[in-house]
Length: 152
Image 1: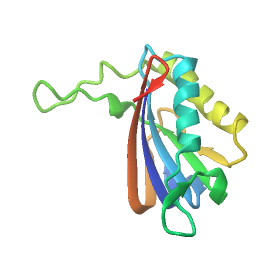
Image 2: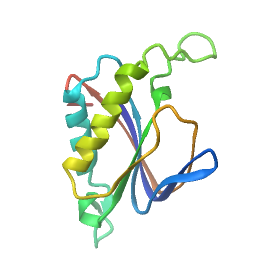
Image 3: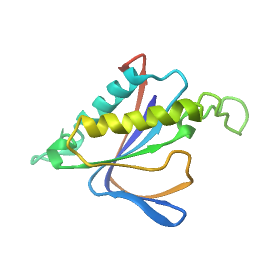
Image 4: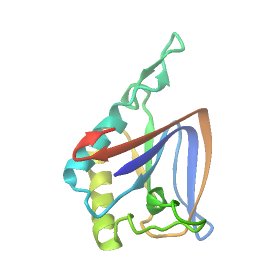
């Protein structure tokens, strides 16, 4: 399981020209899932994201987590995080989770975040063509990968 975590001032996600979800200050997370991922990866990766201390404290030091700043979380399924570009210029997505595996895991990831924090959790729609308009804060962007329940 892979995640690209972007610290944002705001993020707005639209589908078919209609606003679907938006957040203020917090994290916009692109989440990639493989067929070998399980609920073990969900818990480990979600816990890491929810506890990431990359928001500035009163001394300007990145020392605060989402809960500390009353932040929000937006989670968007992103199969292209598993693009393989080793051969040629057209990416292969063979390592991305099949929809019948990835969608339930995406939903469980979102549910886990909602059940294990007090922050608002917004989403995209699995498999939809989404447009995201965001304002990066910093910018701070962190790439996380979780394998066998360990966040790398």
